[in-house]
Amino acid sequence: MAFLISQSTNYQVYLKAFHQFGRLTSAVDTVIDSPEISRIHGIIEWIDAGWYIRDISKNGIWLNNQPITANSLQPLSLHDTISFANRRDITFVVENLDKPCDALVPMSSSEPDDSKTYKPILLQQYHFLPSETSPELIIYYDVSEKQWYCENLSESSVHKIEDGEMLEFSHSMWQLMKGVDQTVNETVAINENVDADLCYVFNISQDEELTELTLKNRNGDIDCDTRTHHYLTALLARYKGQDRLNSLPADLQGWRSIEQLTKDIGLSESHVNIQIHRARKQISDKLLSAGICEPLLIERKRGRVRLAATNFKVFKGQALELDSTSI
Image (cartoon, rainbow, N blue to C red; front, side, top):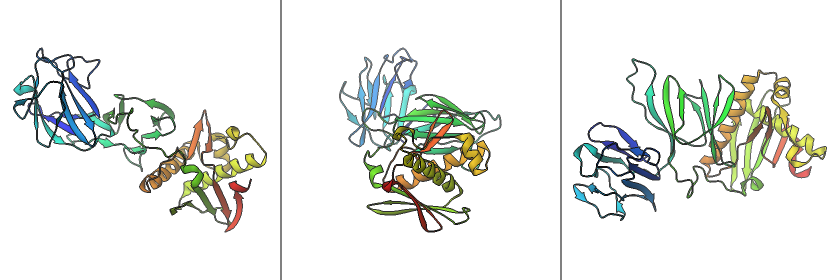
């Protein structure tokens, strides 16, 4: 992730794809509070796989001790120095020129003796924070809505999170920075035709103790191994298949309450909730590693869930139990 470092304070400035500097707090991404600085003084932006700086101020920007031409794009290189209004105390060094991305940027720790240095968390599609084994928050990106969501596991609450919003986990504060220019490129690109080609194949053991999942498409198989959460997903596939057989409208097929899931699986609501997230995360990670991006595997709406996939098969003890293409 691209960032600058202040020569005077060592403060790191992480760059958005279109990043504005200036005095006008309500309009800029990095505030520089000094009378020589214009309301919007300069812009650093990502164009055609490179970073550029542009001066739109009255008092100028100096790049490597040389004033740059106003309103013209100047390419940036590693270790360049950028001085606003030719002030030595408002000088930054270019430390990283990676492409922009959405990230959680560390702000502070609530632990008084915490001297650890935190790095930004570069966001993919799904994150258990601070760790997958002991999650406090779950952050995920819904490619259908083009929106980040956060679920607080202790409060069982889900809400949209926006650029600049603060989140707390593991006694530390983090800020969501939507570094990607949403008008040009989404955080995660979606292939609208993937679902028609991708088939979810569940293989449940005869005693229903073990469930394997394989994803099949024209390019081959993606092995998702044997996981506890695959049984929950297979159960959602069964629900959807039953509703198709009963000729329910497509928008009603497969929806079941969390309460019913807890009864059918024999797990607590909190455990079912974690399994839903583990299933979503594993599949999104597997697909992204194969260059495929789909909407979330399991849909949720007001205490109900359903399988989002439309193409699936369920085997039990190697015998075909359900094939969505033949219903």
